[in-house]
Image (cartoon, rainbow, N blue to C red; front, side, top):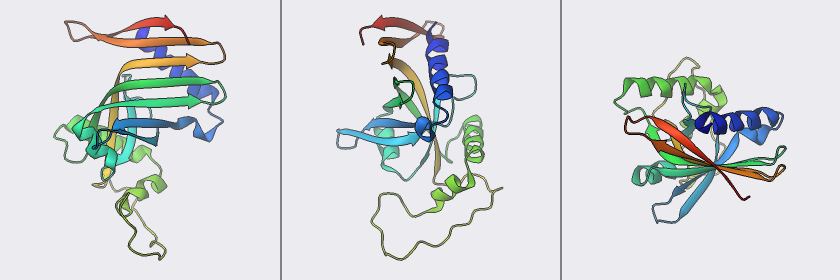
Length: 196
C-alpha cells in the first residue's frame, strides 16, 4: 500500500478539487533561524519524475532558504476544502539553485523554470523579497525573454517525504504513512489506521 496509496490520495484530492484555484496552495513550515516555527504558503509544482518527492519553486533570496540550509527538515500542510481532506507531509528538503554541481538536478531546475508561467518567472527579477521598499513609486515593468533559462534567484525545492498524516473529515478516517528504508536502501512505507 504505502507510497502508492498516499500519493494516490493526494492525486485524487487534487483532481476532485481542481475547480478551486487554491487547491494547489499548501503551507510549508520550517524552523526559523531564531529556532521558532516559520510558515508560509507555497504552490505545489508536481511530483518529481517517478518519485513521491514534492516540487516547490521559490526565490533563493527568501528567508526559507536560509532556514532550510540550517535545518532541512520541513512540513507541508495541505487542506482541500471541497473533499475535506488534510495532508501533513513531513520530510527533508533539497535546495537546487544555480550553483548545484549535479547536472541532473540542474536539468530538473530548468524544467521547473520553463514549466512556470512567464508572469511567475518574472517575479524572480523583482527586488529582494522581505527587504524594505526604497521608494513608493510604481515598480518598472519587468520584461523577460521567454527562451531565457533560470535566473540566479530561481530555486527548486524538493521535499522528500518520510511521514504522511492523512485526515478525511467526511469519512472520519485518518491514516499515517511512515517511510522505512531497508538495508538495501530501498524505501518502503508502513501504513497505520489511527483515530481521527
